[in-house]
Image 1: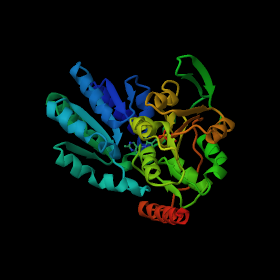
Image 2 (image 1 turned 45 degrees about the horizontal axis):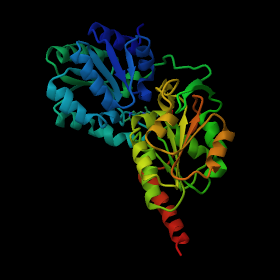
Image 3 (image 1 turned 90 degrees about the vertical axis):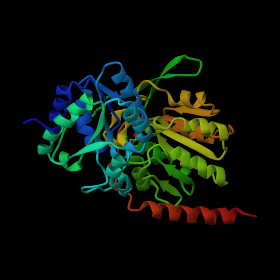
Image 4 (image 1 turned 30 degrees about the vertical axis):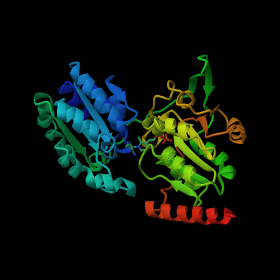
Length: 381
Ligand SMILES: Cc1ncc(C[n+]2csc(CCOP(=O)(O)OP(=O)(O)O)c2C)c(N)n1
């Protein structure tokens, strides 16, 4: 019997879709694996760029489609309405509809609830796909997208994937060819997983402000070192470094950000703002495992191509370190170079099986602010 993924890939093929642009969601990891085997997969750094690339593909006579998560619609709404819809450039969107049907992550719920209203307010029609029988509902609106030059969204309910077991992304050893600023290439080897790296930082991060990337990184930190000064991110991908920057500007405390390659690539411009403000109490630890680890290990462009330490230097950061071992990471953390530190740590893909964080967003905020407030007061003369 054909799987849901196979059927979807067939539907896309028969609609002559030739470019499938995607930013992962855990629920569609099997579908993305199938799509990556078709040769038409374009991995994105941010949903918004997918709208631009799709427009270009259409302008040149191609047929694009995008696969994203509901939260990603928030990242692309301006481009979607002022480019695709306004210019009448066709674009079918396959949206993994999170925040409903047994959702475990509370932070997914606000965007999940707003999704249909946002689409309606933007004049974008949609079709809800809840069960495998609903796959039949795709063909006609998909045909109209290209016949009538429109945007149309297909909302993929998590229910659609019930019982699905596909092939996961797997990796051998990760050897990263880095380009140093003087353009010589050197080979670096990733030795540790994210969990091993955070575990090695347990003492250093203890009683410090730590803003942690969403998904598995925050869950791992919770497991390794739970403390009220941790700001766990439950959503808003790409915001760890900006949040840390804001705290560092207003607080005298040392601020650590644990960020990820996928999240930094989604919002890399923030490194220019960090470089501009350059607060000396901010340290960004960019754990680069070369994949979107939390959503099924789909490779990011930093797996063997983009070098985040060169990116950081290019944006103007001055205290930039690149590490392949925990010893190197600890040496970088001890360095007395001034300004914001950006520490690029090469990591192996892999997630530790850890429990969900039991706190809500407002709880994380309240205990964090209470902790910071009392500490700031205690250090006042
Ligand atoms: C706007 C948006 N798009 C997609 C997602 C789904 N998502 C959650 S975590 C994640 C991967 C983050 O990757 P990275 O920052 O490299 O961290 P890692 O899990 O690999 O440590 C993705 C794609 C999301 N939460 N928000």
